[in-house]
Image 1 (cartoon, rainbow, N blue to C red):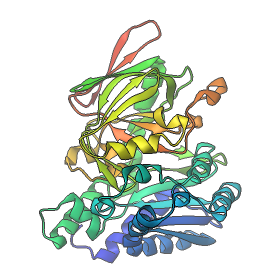
Image 2 (cartoon, helix red, strand yellow):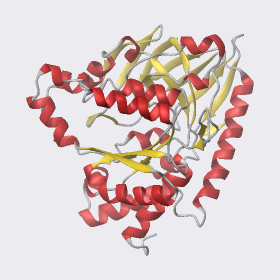
Image 3 (cartoon, rainbow, N blue to C red):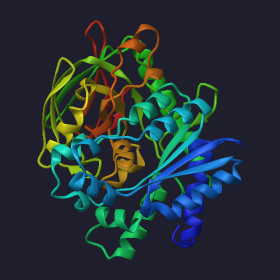
Length: 402
């Protein structure tokens, strides 16, 4: 793809996010968000939205330097604050069934260095509850996509010259988004079809729990009776298909938030609101994360999970096989969108009610947060456990066994 101009590369990525990812519909309002460093791709995405027939594109920029100012100089009442109009906007998006496109790129962790970790952890917008509700109730078609930038390239490839680092990052993003294919959408449809078939075979087994075992990890995650693994995208309540993450390599479901036990070691670094956690270790008892430790950044995650009761319980468990292009690259992107699709992962916080049915909808975990972290690797075995105690291999060496 290096023979294309940077504008052409942005257009190809923007077209994939708008048409295949969010599947923007004629007449829709689109909420488009990104970091200020993403503005060139933001413009390309906005162009594609209007070409798809969008009525209006509402911009929502974020700047980590402004967050630093709030944490460092703002009063206690500014931590975890959201304006009234922010709530109104989220509710309008749900009521009017907007499309949502978020651009995500690795942030420079040095921007937040030296700040109070407790304030950093507690600084989570409560309006996220409204957005999570809109997603959980399938009222919006949405996607999150990567946005290569010089800042992100310097974090991922710090030993390279800036231009070379950005070129390599672009090439990696194009690879994992299948933009190196003549027909990226056809390639995605084939991959997602395979994943849907695998999710179906897992669902047919009706596992009671999943057991993860590997270096530093011995974790059993209970499933609800109606838990269904979902892959290959989602559909709104009005029947609009969309792909919430581009790229996506996972089959995921909502677990039983009361039946998680054991210890787990994260297999990749984790970015929590601009703070990088390394060497994360979590111990669960009866569904609750009773101990959160890390080589770096544990205080931030402890404070973030203390926001509400559901912050220390699981809302998601996801399986990823060795065919993931992200995992095959071996690159740590310091960006959850990509890193979570490299390996099996779990998420603390809000669950997805569309993964369950009946009475189980009222049993899923509820929280303001949803924080994914990676727990899988080729040396982490995943075993399905049936209600009668039979143990069935699911993943071995990154290869599906079902």
